[in-house]
Length: 94
Image 1 (cartoon, rainbow, N blue to C red):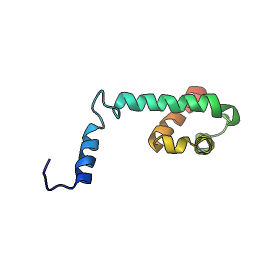
Image 2 (image 1 turned 135 degrees about the vertical axis):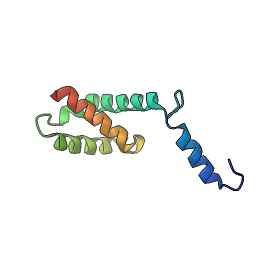
Image 3 (image 1 turned 180 degrees about the horizontal axis):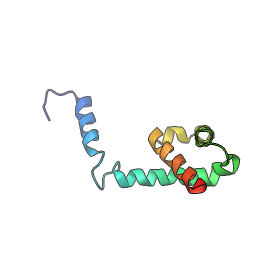
């Protein structure tokens, strides 16, 4: 890295380069594990209170609100939450 590059920019470049490195804590396997965590949380704590017979959009809305109520909205990235919600939706509706 260039010495004149600000520390924040160096850190952001490093984090960007680490996103898809196998074995890193932010790699693909880590993302899959986080999606599994969200899906398990939905199945164990939220699914009984949500209507599975409605549309996908309504299911997504209700589960998203329930995740926020549980405080999971701050723990999991939005894309991870959406992937977990979609996994549960397709598991029970296809």
